[in-house]
Amino acid sequence: MKVIENNPFRVLGIISNASAKEIKESETYILRYLDIGKSASLKFDITPPLNEINRTPDIVKNAKRKIHDDFDKLTYSIFWFVNGSLGDKIALEKLSDEKNIDKASETFKIGSRNFVISKTSFSSILNFSTLEIISYASHKDEDRLKNAIRYKYDIIKDKTTFKDFELLITSSTNKINHKSFIDKYLENIKGLLKDIFPRKDQNKLLLDIFSDDNNISEEIEGQ
Image (cartoon, rainbow, N blue to C red; front, side, top):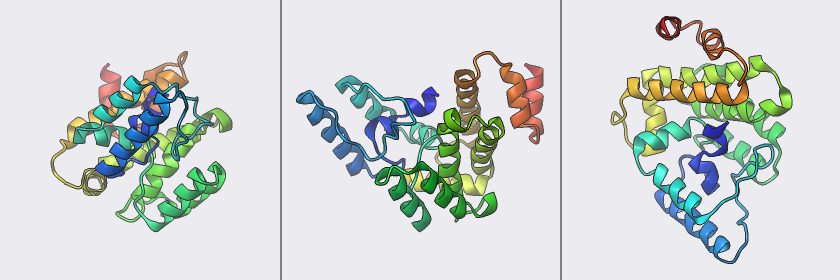
């Protein structure tokens, strides 16, 4: 799960819509600890269940560089956590302060409002789906994993919600090419599935996940 394990926001221990000041402060904080041979305690590292990162100055600095561009920032954000509502704030505190994944997941689920994509629910859906993917090693439920991937796709497929997502992460809209972003998302999903199911037919998995989207299905079948 490189797209999550090595996510630059995770490396820096911050949420995806952290301010530029917060990003810089986190980089400086981690580097100062590394200078004295220690590891910084980060709110959003999520270890466990994610594998521990061996942070080095180069890895930390490179993570900050990766989220300088708005397209890249959005690309990594879809696979991490955002604070987009009061419910998200409460759930993120349960995740970061209490280290309680189950309680955080349940709170995100409540904020997801039956998983109907909207301006008020998409951030909780994004967060819930990220936790579902992260927790796959524990729950081992392929349907839950596939649903999580679909939820993320539903968020970015809808152009109106995509604009809301872009605004939340980059503070601007209509600067990211919608089709290019979806293509990048699918590319990352292929990598994610390969990491999790190295011995399975990736195209069959993709066809199962995106069976309701004719364009994606036709493209996969063509390949």
